[in-house]
Image 1 (tube, one colour):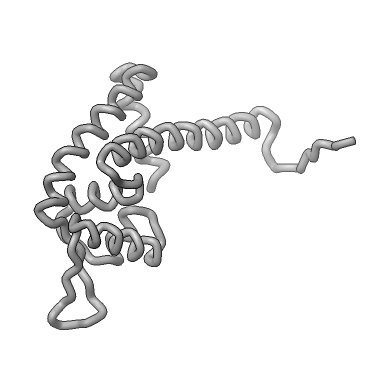
Image 2 (cartoon, rainbow, N blue to C red):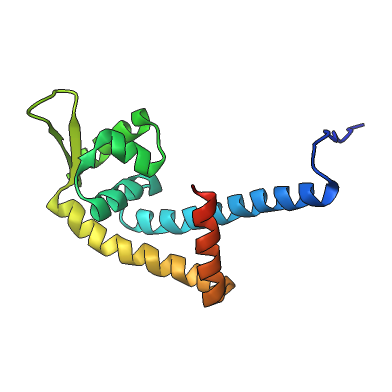
Length: 152
């Protein structure tokens, strides 16, 4: 016979349900958005993590490996792995600093820039469609405002 564990929290039942509901709903929404990015990435022959790097470099321009890791929310080791894979297919290039061997900047190649210009609008359109099917324009603005507060 399996027993359900009921851990004690400092929250009342209503607040506990609200908190876990928000947590789970955010995870579900993140999963759906990831699937959107994965579909666009797959159409380009990439994984979502690779498209994420292309997206960040396309919007920000050449940046350091450390900053790229921060912007993509990926560990430095995984960022290096992803950048190496993108280098092999000539979508990005790593440039070593003349002042320091340890300082490396990553930039899109022309091929990478072309891919960014194709994929970025595709992701935006798909995300906008997903959001617009579920939220009004006012809801989207409110959600953006609330998420910005949570992200700080």
